[in-house]
Image 1 (cartoon, rainbow, N blue to C red):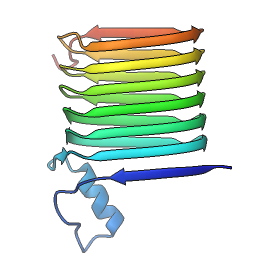
Image 2 (cartoon, rainbow, N blue to C red; image 1 turned 90 degrees about the horizontal axis):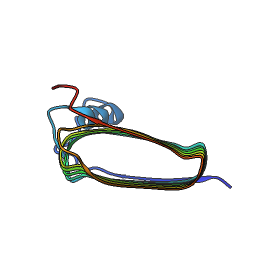
Image 3 (cartoon, rainbow, N blue to C red; image 1 turned 30 degrees about the horizontal axis):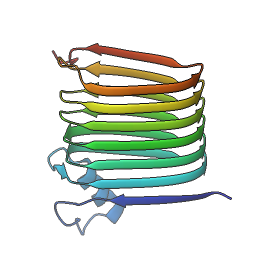
Length: 175
């Protein structure tokens, strides 16, 4: 049995435009670089096989993203720009992929993967990062690129067989 739950909570700063179809107006508001996204909460829960969750937030401040996936071959992609944001990603099963790009200061990331052949690949750009990564199982991979003049606070825990960890740290690509 396959089923999927998706809950998305967004606070929009102004009413939708009546002359545009609702989907187009919502997309314009959510992707507008001039409107900050403050204190949003995104919760996605997926169970089954081959689900994909993609989240893009620009100018996010004090927003929370939580994704829970159980099953096989799920994918999560997050792109977020902003300050004081939190990610909490949990994947259980096999062949899961997490890809993330986080640009901003004072952000927190927590990723947990349990199972086989799971991968994490993320770019962290900014100061004051605090992250925790847990991978348990076999054939797990973590590739992380950090662009910051200050070392982030982090905890990486891998347990099992066939592990790969690559963490590169350097200055921001704009410097």
